[in-house]
Image 1 (spheres, rainbow, N blue to C red):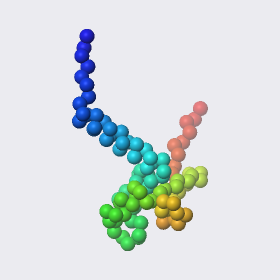
Image 2 (tube, rainbow, N blue to C red; image 1 turned 120 degrees about the horizontal axis):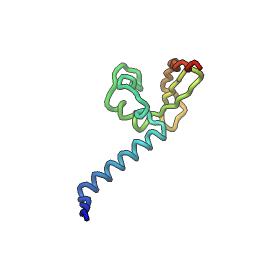
Image 3 (cartoon, rainbow, N blue to C red; image 1 turned 120 degrees about the vertical axis):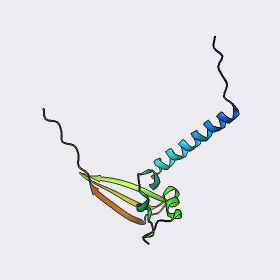
Length: 103
């Protein structure tokens, strides 16, 4: 019979930390956080001054939300402050769908 090793306190703490971090990322994605929507750093210029600061990058986690809408091949992302109807920016792009296979 094989003896199973027990988790040490350090491993339990690490597992707990990883589970908490996964929970936070899942909550951010569920609530529409801009940071979990595939933004590049240069797109996080919320005050339109041409420079992205560390504060603006952190705002993409807790203060800015994204609403994605699809109208045919057009996909629009509306960025707004969390809890507000004020829109910061709307980015739209046309996406091409792969052709349907011929029978």
